[in-house]
Length: 334
Image (cartoon, rainbow, N blue to C red; front, side, top):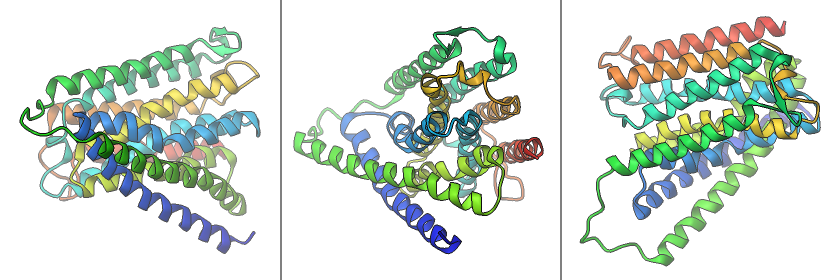
C-alpha cells in the first residue's frame, strides 16, 4: 500500500474522530446537566474511558498477537505524556487568562492520583524482575486497579459536594430525552472507538514505511496517534466553553492509560509485564509524574502571567518535560 493511500486513510480516521468527538462533548455536557453530574467528573470518567479505548486495544494486541511488551508499555506511558502535554494547547487557547485561573479545584485530585499511580509504575520498572508477582501478574497491577477506582469515586464525591444544587423549580428531564441523549452519546462513542482502533494500524504501516524504530514508534509516534480522540474531544469541549470537561478528559485519560498497564499485565502470559520491558520506560513514567506535579502546582498557585503572551510558565515546564523525554527515548532507541 502506497504512502499516499495510507495518508488518506489517516486523514479519514482523523476527520471521523474530530466530528464524533464534537458530538461526544455535546452529549457529555447535556448528560452532565440532566443527571446533575460535574463536568470535571464527566470528562474524567465518561469521556476519558471512551477516548482511551484505542490505547487499550492496541496495547492488548501488542502483548498477545505481536508479543511486543515494550510497544504496549511505551504506548500507554507515552499517551500519558502526550495527554498532559496537550494541556499546553488548552492553556494557550484560553485567551483571557491562563486556564489554571479558571479550572476547578477537583482536578487536583485527578493529578495527585496520577502521581501516585505513576510512582508505583516507576518503582515496578526500577525493581524489574525482582518485583513480586501473583500468578504471573505483577503485584502492582491490583494496586493500580484499586487506585483508579478510588480516583473515580473521590472525584465524584468531591464534585457532588462542590457543585451547585439543581434548581428545585426546574422540571426534571424526561426519561425519553435522557435515553435519546444516551443513544447519541453511544453512537458517537462507537465512531470514536472504531476510528481510533483503525488509526493505530494505519499509523504503524506509515511508521514502517518511514523506517522508524519500534521503541520510538511506541512511545512517541503511536502514543501521539492513539491520543487523537482525546485531542478531538478536548477541543470540542473547549468550543462549548466546558473547560473543566476538557481538563478532566485529559487527566482522566492519563489515569486510564496507567490502569491499562494492569489490564495488559493480565493478558501477558510470560510473567509480570513491567518486568519484561526496557528500563527506559521508567524515564517516561517519571516524566509523566513531573508533568502531573506541574499541573498540581499550577492549580494551587493559579498563575496569572503568560510567557511571551502565549501560555503560563507551567505550560513552558510541560513542554520542556515532554521534549526531554522524547530525546531520552530517541537516544535509547538508537
